Length: 518
Image 1 (tube, one colour):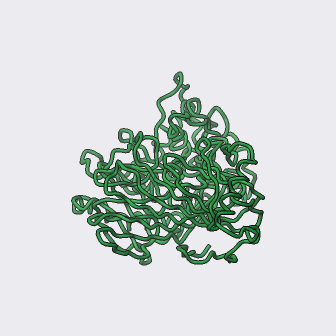
Image 2 (tube, rainbow, N blue to C red):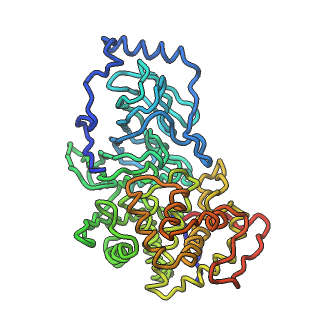
């Protein structure tokens, strides 16, 4: 996720959703609604059904860290987001979010995650539906219950408000427009969704902006249409994506194109005024990509690039195919070159670890951030002589304190309700890369690299949990590693480091240090 910068650290096939028919096929009028003969009857029926049910309530899929995040009973297949930017980044955008889903349980109501916007209309399969807000859920009552196994299309007409505290996530106001930072639970501050990484989907974005502004989103461009003084930019993803990884950039930007390994299209989005200032950093991405592919295999997506935002966020973010970076990371000449380089590799590594292979629950966050921190540190070791062993020894010394402050790597304590990004603590960064270092010490470098390659290949475009990693590691090593992982992932105290019996972890200091993001 967000890679927080403290002072310099120690030494499926593409689905072209637009308004095309759904890939699973569906008659224009679903069987459950054939008896509804008119729009008036549909609307009145929805109202009667809503009145007959208990009061709307927020739901969730049972994530231990975010209990109301996500919703049961359906699987989102695709999102289409139509947003219109008014030209001022303090005013709400008008939007229509269309959701194509497969119903997995009989539902009288459909819950979506949504807050910080006003809803003016909802339809289910083209027919008006009743709706109400409950907590951070939008609770929809279709005219007739939806049944398991049926496809459904939901359309919500709403606003999307970029105002509010900057640290709540969602829209990020930049010097010339907007970008997005949705991790961990903030995509539903931008658009109605099933806002949990366990429900990945394809995305289409249609972004209408005034003349003089450029709009960019995840995936590849799929057309641009001029309407008087505005332009609508369309983008589509070729791989499923978690909602927390969605990205829309609007601003006075230049899109810089170049080729990566194997002809991979790379595109960077930078403030036009900073085009030359950014180029020395932007041109490093092909070499970063080549290095990562040598470690874990082919890049998993259709494009990649750096999005430079003129905003103060305190972090960088691995949004899928287009990682978000603060302008000052590249403009601050006091930062060592190796440090900036390694942060760029951290966010690139997330495209494999966290984006292509996404966590099944937020307790699996260590798999994202531990791996990104591992490859960040390994890159700095190999290219800049910043000792990996020295960094891991320092992490080991701090590890017991990190565990006391935020829980062990695979059982982190819940974030503060009023500060959700407090989930991103040191224990999920170097505290988790330390687990990977210990594993490499335990099974050997060759087996470790085979495991890493097998992991990103086996679970590509999907979700995986800690138990999956433990099982695959055991199969790769040819022996049961359950006991090893139990201590490293779940114990209050850090186990002895294989090969380094002299390493010591310092006792926790009271409540520990303040949480970090990254």
